Length: 126
Image (cartoon, rainbow, N blue to C red; front, side):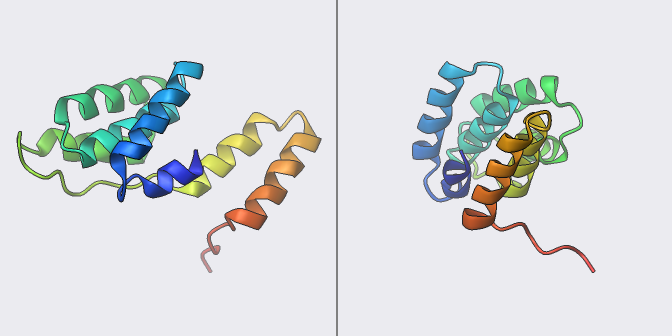
């Protein structure tokens, strides 16, 4: 999923296809819906973007990135490039995975190790 989140602004159709496939397997996955909505926004598919972003917010109503993206899409006019979009960050996904397996330390530790190798955490604010 992280790979497709990274290519969303560069190759939104390719990323959208991947998120659609993931949603076939996990239709209630709000994170995929938010990412798919962002892809649709980059593709200029305003109505589809609004639908997916709203669906994501039904599950996670406090997600600030999704709220900001929905606001940017809703403010845009049909047939114009949608600007002001906020990309999804790897850090959010890392936290979600680690929290999902918090009751299984061996899974959490494996996830931490993989992320340290491939997606180091952003530097802490000092």
